[in-house]
Length: 55
Image 1 (cartoon, rainbow, N blue to C red):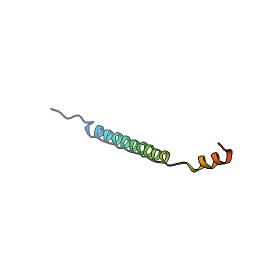
Image 2: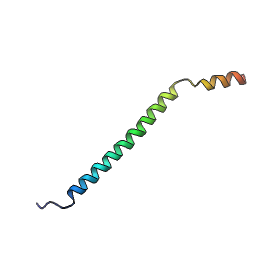
Image 3: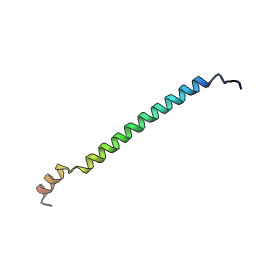
Image 4: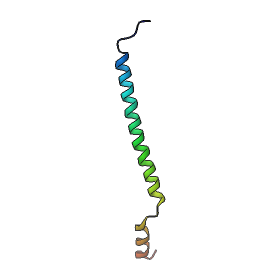
């Protein structure tokens, strides 16, 4: 079977696409987990506003 001349280029392009996809996915996953951890912590401004406004 004859090998196509674009094999190396296609492999490089697929590898680049995969790497960029992984990097983007990792960044968004990190942001999601950091925000989730942040949302689980009590927000100190809520308490000060609640005390200030007598809610």
